[in-house]
Length: 364
Image (cartoon, helix red, strand yellow):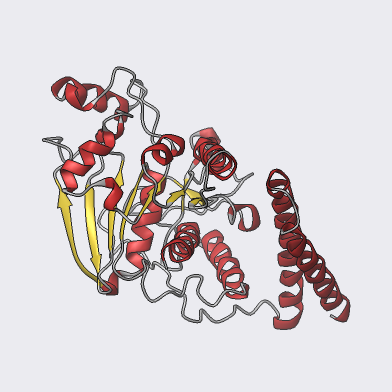
């Protein structure tokens, strides 16, 4: 026990010295330094895990006052990615211990998801939707009202299109959410289309959170629907079906931008675009711009595992991790899946908390 405790103190001291040194480094070196710091932090977490196991005999720590989305087959209509079973129980036990060990007094514990009197626009694909649906679930008790907008213009109820909705909170903050919208496939006009839909200018919004947009592929159901939709609404699309990037967003919008890549490794082009935008605006513009942020959706995956699921049914899914048996190859690899939710939460909770912290840092 004393040996484990000594290891923790040593690693913490190392990380503290290293973190202090970041302030002395030139900007190009900081990214590499941060990666080393994350590696050191992961070592601290692993050592803390040993300490907790030895000290508490694997007893789960209390939940404290964390905002966790408790989704069940009974209270969610479309039942997306809800999991149960031993693997999910093991994952959420480790997740909650991990969450309760963090030093922050606000991560996962804010009274409201947005600062007072703010208006935030959040858009992306189904991975982004998992995060904002979780965020709304976590804070459902402080939602004053919600409304939907007709942005599908006659698409059927069976369509894979998402819909635009706004959610007003008790602190006079508003979150507008968009997922899998056909309106993004025109890099030059998408913002104006949403401005008309919402009756609000992009510049008047306090922050924009952007995830990844699905590539346009006619081989997918979504791609085929977009093709049919574009034929009846050609004014909404450009010839290449180009969706916005973090770089193009930052060029047209000067307010705070938060990039949120997919949980899947193949969806990290958003992170690459964000890093290029951050580097450019911090080093090539005057004054330097510091309001572009990147929330790594896979940051916690590296510590806790994948816990992936693609199940939409009346039966709960299994929390799947790398190396699991995937029914003879009939399933995608867990890395490519969405992430389990359920009565004890999941990865989307952690990413939602990260986004909330960035919003408060940027807007308060």
